[in-house]
Image: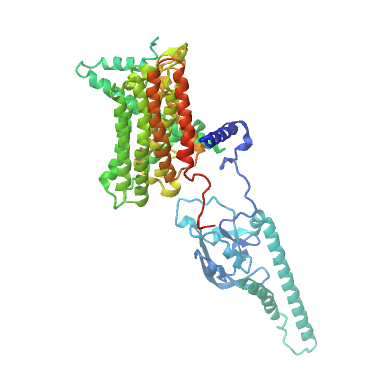
Length: 222
Length: 391
């Protein structure tokens, strides 16, 4: 019969209308600023820079390799390399970003920067309350605004952060073992022919670290 | 029978006017009524918007607006302030004069229609002998505004929306008029006051509303369908289909001009509900003779707001129609049935009092409804779509 479907539909909406007053579990609305639900672990919006330790400037993992800057599809990252160097997490001297800006009004949250980073230095944040009254400066985050501690990373993406930490610890251990072996070999070498200069044990350490870090970089690039 | 509460506004008007010199009194009386109408209907508009947003929310298991004021009741006021403070943008290539005139024409025309509605006992602003005709003349003028808006904006969406709007409104104007003509045939008058007076009679406590007759019920259903299409409401909201045409004919409107379109649309809804109430639901007459103690204007506005609730309910239920479905429905189903309804109304009058006319008229209408549903609608491929090439 013509119109039967319409009546059925009207009954359905009437049931929903009345039901929303009776049963609270029908209403899925979260009263946002007052009520909040924790974001799910896979949430991501904009990138941030991870730092270890207490000092954000000293602990930044980023070595200003500019891979993310080059890979970024909307080109929202701007990096200026530093002139001097500072030690990274394994103790190797690395350059660091003197400027690291991300324009989050341009960023499309694609996570490509995170995927290409060989140093686990850039990760995706879950902070979404980024509204600002300044649409240019307020949305251009510099490295201070972007720097967030590893603890923060652990808090927002626990599983992922633990994996990253394990990987970094492994690399560090490997680098240390290698450095130790090289140092030991050098010491043995130095002990056997006593004529070699004393500067030898200090020298091989950087090259050993270099060797330890390189495969990681190669792997991500491929 | 006629209490003071019933006539409170009439008495108030007389009392206020009595302070003025006799020469000014007629003008002042009309102006007072106009002020009343212009104050009451936008208030009802605000209430209708609030009801709509709350009702649709509940239908979709949401809360609806609940931030501004208790239960979000002040939301329409907040919206009004917002639209007043917004920038009024006129596109560079738009015809500025016509672009400006369109919302004004809409609002003016819509309020003009209300002038002839009897909103209570002795409460018709202009008691015209051809009130119904005047109402339809004003109702048809809204198409002018729609087309002015669409044409002057120089925007493809606006123009498409206006084209759709005019096609739809003209198509549904015919069944709207035809379903009302049945009422005129029975009453023998185009005056809305007389139409209400004819329905304001009671047999053993029950009213003589036209909706309680076979032809009246059929006419009311047709009228409601046509009125929904006439006011561009869902499921006939093609002219402003936001998923296809941004906002249809008022795409290029912002700020208070947009608010005026919004106002015009809702007041149009209120006025056409008022007309439907007047024609079929007994206007300001009480649903039971013992309820006659309640002021007549309360009954009128209660019926109008009830119709608005039905509008909202239907909007929350039905998806938008396709343009061809819309036209098929108007010309192949609604119009033939309204024409038949005219014949049935004539038969109702000829057969005189007695049970025979109930049986005959109901039988004809039911049969026609069944047949029309079969031949008028079902022969068209309305149903699962068949693809000839893309399999």
